[in-house]
Image 1 (cartoon, rainbow, N blue to C red):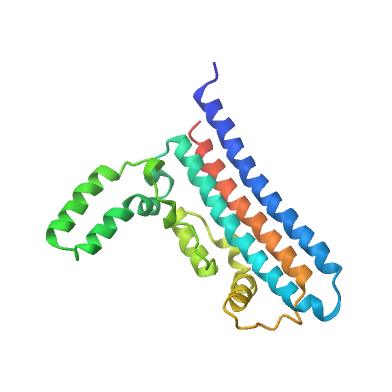
Image 2 (tube, helix red, strand yellow):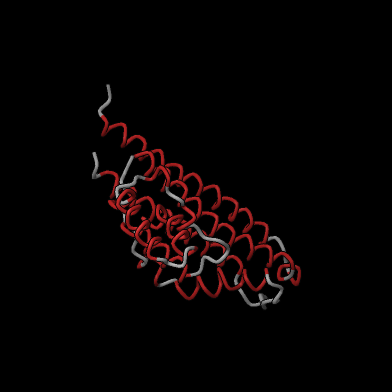
Length: 221
């Protein structure tokens, strides 16, 4: 019979593999797009094709982040970890309905007392009722949003700090320009480089989530 620690390590490896598989799928799609863009010459490259590339690159950036969140919370739920042991700020994902009720009742004295009483019950919660909307992205994964979510997750933003301008201006800003009909001038950008940058950001994102999972769950074995 396997020891609990060995079972947990097997599950941890599975979750890390799922993140890798999702990243590779997205990276392959971006690589295919890069090949197709290389075959297009002249004005056609910087019309609808470049816009599609910009939007798809952002979709993979945000989509992969949200997928990492899914797998990360799934792994923590599977490990039966206490939310406060992983990151105190993650309790937002448990307290969200209670915080909303507190706001709805205009922070009345009775609402505040009930909130504190509920806090006593929820403080030792695991991830079974965790609402991951507290750390998901909804169409605006710029550096500020990423930094805010990382603070809740208990992650360091340092690995992304040097790429702050490129994330905000190119990965997010260009996509918003296309999506909102502002017609950003894409005629001078290196489309191949933009795809490579997106792939690099996906790899960096995977590393952050995987390393944190390994560091926090490996201690429990």
